[in-house]
Length: 85
Image (tube, rainbow, N blue to C red; front, side, top):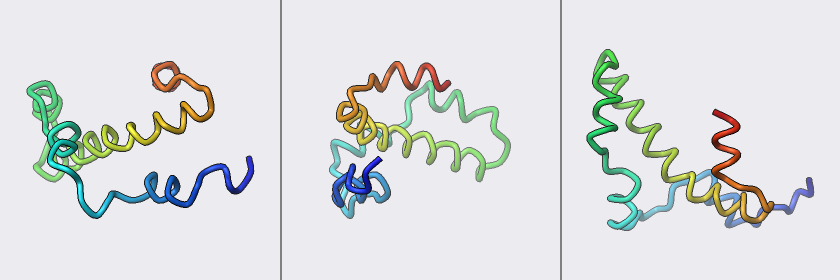
C-alpha cells in the first residue's frame, strides 16, 4: 500500500483525539446507556469498569473515523466488523 494512502490529517484523526470534542459528539459517543452499565456490572473493581467503559467509548468514537476509511476502500464497515467478531 502506498505510503501516502492516508493524508496527514487522516492519519492524525486515526491516532489522536481532537483537542476539542463537541457536546453533540460527547453525548453521541461517550454517554453510557443502560445496556452499557449492564455490561460493566459483572466486572470486578472500579479500575476494570473504568477501563472497559473508556475502551467502549473510544471504539465508538474511532469507529466513525474507520467508516470513512472503509468507504475509501469500497468496503462495508458492518460486514467487516461482523466477520472480524
